[in-house]
Image (cartoon, rainbow, N blue to C red):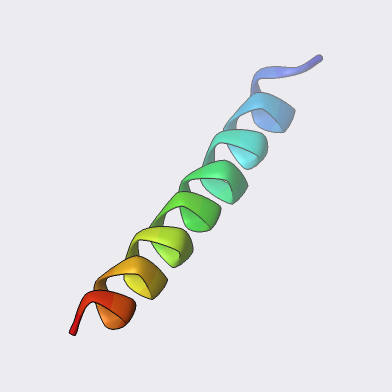
Length: 29
């Protein structure tokens, strides 16, 4: 795996986490 692929994976994974956190915060309101 190249560093570029690893970076893309990290960004995609980070985006997923942010989306989940956003959904949880909305559910708590």
